[in-house]
Length: 70
Image: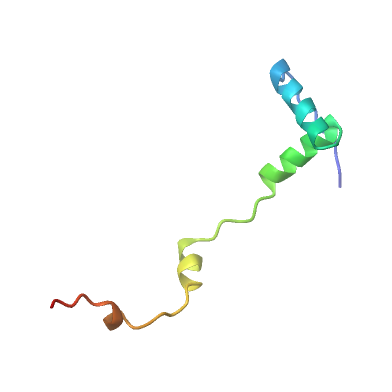
């Protein structure tokens, strides 16, 4: 469900930059604002260390990585 969002007391330079960026991207300032909010807030969930380690492929046994002198 969509709703309205009002942002007050935004610095004039920020509004100017938003409008300039909107023009560069070929959309309205309102559409640009929505795109910025979506990009900032709909990022993929960060994986836990466990998930990262569990996803690593098995590349050998511990003995394959032992330090050998000489």
